[in-house]
Amino acid sequence: MPSSLIGVLQRHCEDIDSACPDPRQFTSLAEVLGGIPDPRRVRGRRYRLGALLALCLVAVLGGATSLAAIARFAADTHYDLREQLGLTSSMPNASTLGLLLARLNGDALDDAVGAWLARYATDPVDEPGDTLVGLAVDGKTVRGSRTDGAAVHLLAAALHACQTVIAQRQVATKSNEIPAFAPLLDQIDLRKVVVTADAMHTQRAHAEHVITAGGHYLLVVKGNQKKLRKQLRHLPWRQIPLQPAPPGPGTAAARSAV
View 1 (cartoon, one colour):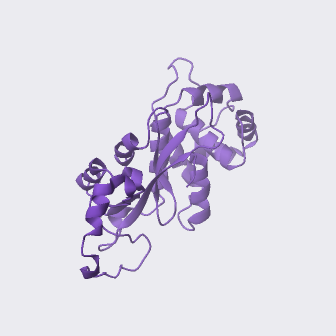
View 2: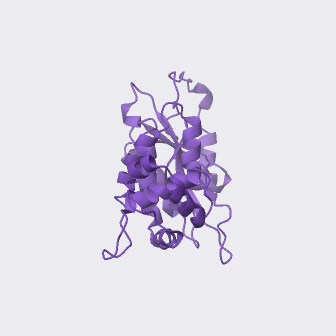
View 3: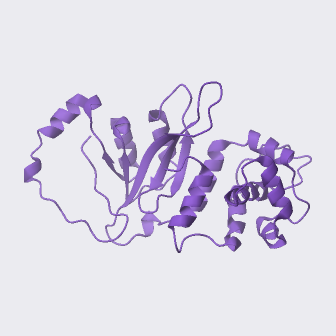
């Protein structure tokens, strides 16, 4: 699973043939990012927030790996792309970009990019018939993010069919993934969606949260849930008929017993 927003965009464009946005659609990206709370003072603002953030994402997708490289990309980029991003005046320098990114709300940025990516992925509500869409919830530590002995750990939700991350949340340093589960899924319409997760998230509260939101779940039961695992082992599994899955991508199993 990708561990950064840039990885999400790169994987999305590699795996989705018809859904990958063309350059003209970066205008919509700038509009979506413009809805993020702006941490800058009103006085002295020279560039629109959405335009700056869209520029940073496009630059990193183009190979930029530092603030200086993003600034060079901005200075060298074609006028047409600048216009699509909403940057028609002089380009921002590295210090301007660094000050903005350091103060930006990370969760708000995650939500905005996830919403934009979801526009080009399968919409669960629009799927025909009884087809269910799989959504994997999993966590990963971000490589190279370790500071003061602690690394950034993200909990992400990715569509099974195209591996596109449509939401993610940073896990608090002195916590674990469990408290981040519900806030992560609150950003997603779970109707006709099957949420899958590992044994850490086999929690009654998690299952109830998914069901209340109109979704389904498939959770793993291991030795950390000894009583539940024992109950499941005694169920008459051989007497339960297997139903063929409907054709097409995104098919997943229904609820498990928790």
